[in-house]
Length: 196
Image (cartoon, helix red, strand yellow):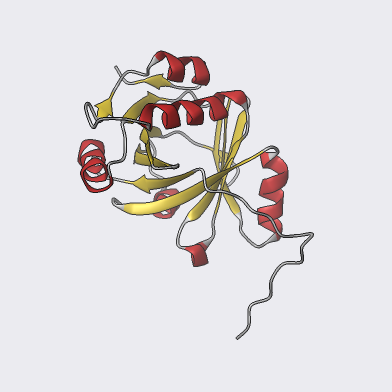
């Protein structure tokens, strides 16, 4: 069966920004990525003040802890999730431990890009906002993972640049870091705080 390619007008190149995994234990996952791939250092982000958070259009709460570091030019986000009120369908979509749950790219207009994915048949199931960053998750079962969109706003792009800078020339020391360096803190502003 042949594959129909998009017309030149509809074709887009969307470079991957980061890949995200659900893990059972952040420290063990970080150790695995560091020892296997030389990825890191990883910064643990335990307090992310979401201004809005919705699953299938309904507000919800979660305790989301993430560790973010670089593996070469690609970011790696290792995540744990806890839900004060269980949401089985969302937990299923996020996947169990050791599960690739999303691949992320950036967009100048995440609302318009989310609508484009909807038109392609990839339904949006999660929406959130932190400051100027409106982000969306879309279900794409045949790819084996969800798509996450983040906005190309200074807080996001600054964080990405800081992660890349900290990874360059890293000597493997202190792979797990609970305090953000000044570059991270300045870039992210009030979007995240490192864990204490």
